Length: 274
Image 1 (tube, rainbow, N blue to C red):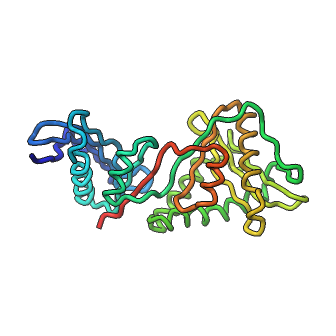
Image 2 (image 1 turned 30 degrees about the vertical axis):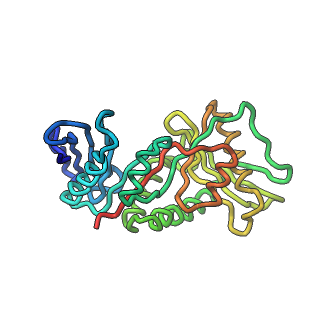
Image 3 (image 1 turned 180 degrees about the horizontal axis):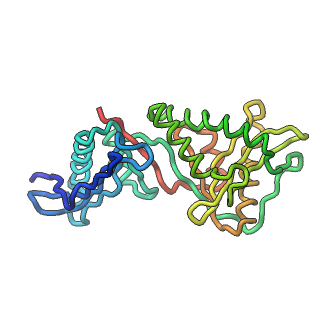
């Protein structure tokens, strides 16, 4: 029996080169599932994204999804894409195993946790205060390069990485330090700045957009203090959940988040198309 993709709708194409199309996954012309493929909304028409892949229950565990995913890669190559990406829900071991078998690599994961009923207390020798305008300007310049390098280190070309960072800053920091719903803080110890924190509302929950402990102050528990401060700020904002993103390979950060009760919700994976 032969598994193929059959278009179930017209190719959607914009003037900027963005494409998307729905396909039926077929076995000898019999539909057994569906897949939706599109060029990436952030990285542009040279990057494809599998937005949905479903195989009907009675046809699972027969290699249909594997063949469909490989066929989607060929479609993406035909579109001129050099990379393909997907989001894998946590708690879907079969999907994760399929992505790994096909050579996808984790780039980052989204994590979240329910907030405690009461704001956690910071250690007695550290304080948190709002970021000043001067500190904000220094931080935005510094964070642009750091954030871009995180993407570059994980397979994104430099031009794409900086374009994403600049778009993210435009969208998330439209009014700078006064951006509605955003809170920018610095953590101090004995009046010396040891770390920074950016928390903002996102899709109904609080989200930690950036947390950084200055290099000379790392390994002293300041990352945990910053995260506890973030939880307190989210409670003040009336939220009951907090989320964040962590890049693959950032083991110290991942261990910190897991120790605080964060759990993975979505894994974001990618594969270079040779």
